[in-house]
Length: 174
Image (cartoon, rainbow, N blue to C red):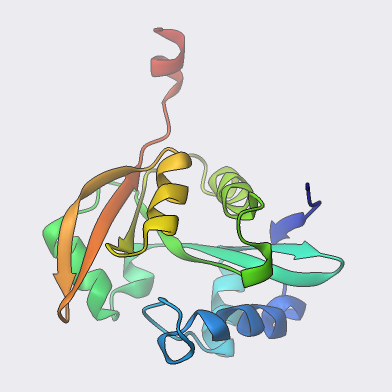
């Protein structure tokens, strides 16, 4: 079954839907998100044009963030990852990516990533996934991300990943 999504930069009207998608992905609801973001935090991300949403039938069913390392410098797990794996120049942090449970497996995460990349001008990215989250690791590998290595934060194992979009020179030299 193929679904049709409207994917674009988020607007302030999307914030209630973003919060609704975020909630079941938080640890106290069985999810694996590391940090709960507030409506104000999402409002700032929207102003910075760093959040892409997917909508189906007018409802937000998924989102992904692309932020500077400085925007998340206060988050302990980000600090831990960046100490273990220093970011390349002009890198952005990919994630989190949150997909409503009933939309998973339909290609939305990859579609959100593709649109985010166009807004980030093909800059390199870094992200992390819990080491025990095999479906998420598979999805990120399928999108072309590569493992940087493992790190631990507060006793939990994570895998750091990177994506380096091929440059024009690489494409033409093949």
